[in-house]
Image (cartoon, rainbow, N blue to C red; front, side, top):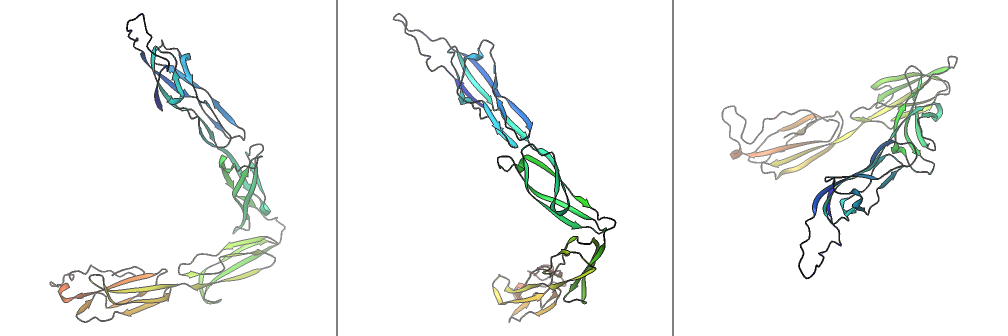
Length: 346
């Protein structure tokens, strides 16, 4: 909301017959300008809102004495909020008897998005309901996922919608995606797909439970390999077309991470060169802390099992003056210590 005073720029004192005349005091009045607004649903056509209303605080003031120099029109086609752009500076008063203050509330056009439903179908097809005339689905992804009961779930996503002019109007829709369930024909021949997950080699330690499912002959399958912390596989997704009883193997290899041990004095300076070692996930480590003359070490031996991430340990060296022991209390300058596997600690 904005406000401005409107006066007659030609309101000048008029000379009388040789005597000074005092201009009559102008009557103060407030004129409230409210731009018209409208909220509609996107339908692919252009919507327009025009005009405004004016209300005077004084019934003696004639609204027709308002001079408007703006453009009280706003149009839009796609979903969004479109302001009319009214300001107090666009309004002026041409009645010199009144001192007018304009208070302006801008008008607007709001176009809300339309709701459509896209349902996935076999072989990348889909159906759509609610699409406005002239608009089209330009591109879309339909992913076929095999279900454990033998059915196929066709999952639509990432639709791009354009209008007849080629403009991207995807944002003018709220898209409801529905998975289409594809059931094999009862008489269709079926084959079983089995995927086994191993650590290191086939026949070794199991990485996860086997995946097994029935597929119709000629059906495509796409199976995501399970995630195993500390291990990785190049076969992150197994795809293919079933044509016989099929058993596939996925091999996981152990990931490696870096163990870093800092040896520092209590002031933070280096006491001994930093220890670094690349280790496999789950590997045990035991690193003896080097001795420093006239200093006591806070961790004499760093031990543990390598977690599925890089690990940093800080070992501090304290002088006898920095260690004060009273009975069985914690030495001064050394925090209570709990060494948990996989944590960074001092």
